[in-house]
Length: 175
Image 1 (cartoon, rainbow, N blue to C red):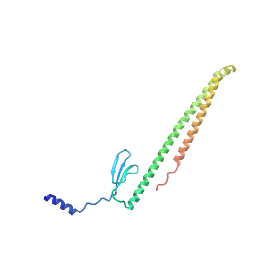
Image 2: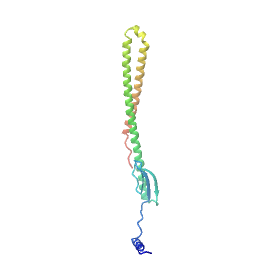
Image 3: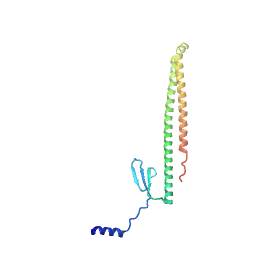
Image 4: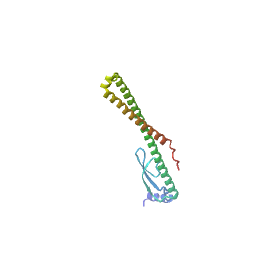
């Protein structure tokens, strides 16, 4: 053997065995930006865990910590889902409110149109008789638009109430 190789072997033998890493798991996870990570530390709660590789059996304390971490992740996912649902419900309520306002505006315009038609074509009994179908059509259109506006307002109110109830719901206690 060469003297340099012998010297290296002696130094390694005197240094003793290398300390063994006590880490028992290797995590493969994806961060919110879509990057894949391979680490020996548990990923953050918002990460999507793809695979956990056990390199040796877990101690009871490590198993308890792992279970607690899983519960925290599940709770964080549930809370995020609730926030998304509440935001979507609020968005839909706002959209329904805008549609109701537009329906009310159209109904008011049609009522004015019906009034104008009555004034223009209904000023004498003979003209009323001559244009009764036109007057009736404008009146019916106004009534139909009023009913649509009323339904839109009711739907907007229901969605707004549901969004308020969802937003007022207390957060579940964290374990």
